[in-house]
View 1 (cartoon, one colour):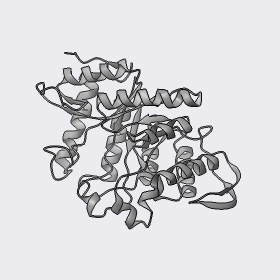
View 2 (cartoon, rainbow, N blue to C red):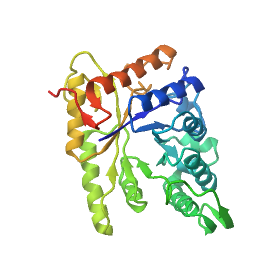
View 3 (cartoon, helix red, strand yellow):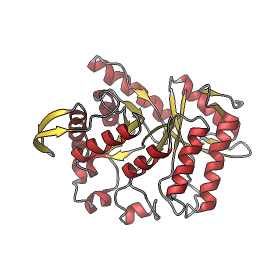
Length: 315
């Protein structure tokens, strides 16, 4: 298995120093991936969940590429329709070159209508825009002189530079739990990246992905879920316990369940987001330290980052 960490690029405690600390610490502990998330505007609806500083994800990745050397970096997830695809293609290609080819491009359609309104983008067309923008981005990553005439983007004879370090462009991870996300992952030879899924939701997605892939005569996409990380001293009640929440033994059991589904990559998110029960109102320095402690405990008691194995005791 490969293991990753969702690095908080938001909150009262966020700073260049803390981003560096999280990324270098994740690299030191042997994690394979470090991912940041995305909000481009913070209208009232977004502030209900993220009321404090929020660093722009591409700028954060540029910083992280300069302070790390081996860990893969990426987005979980960038909201595609909120930025012009020419800008996105060049930004990601540039960061991929700067990082030596270590970028994973996690994308999603977003779900906050106020954020779309603030940026003058039609929320109702976000799915169609995402499909078209992904086509534009991957064509630009191929390099050369590119022209495109679509419903949402049109340009003639652009020189597409730089070409990403990774041939064909960074791997594309598609967030979302609905069938369109699976379809996009299959269409772009990508990975399905559900955020905070349940086992039932994963099983349904795996079945749907197999059917969609078979109908197109292609392999089913890989799966890389982002799950919570909250370690308790004692076991929590079942059922209804989220993946990644509970005692060392319970979380180890969760990981064995995921491994049994041939899931090869898991991203852990240690942040108590405000939309979780009993979450703190602010990501203070104390909260940031508590979250990092959970990552340290994960690496020492539950997983073996060197061997990609699960070492915690199971129930």
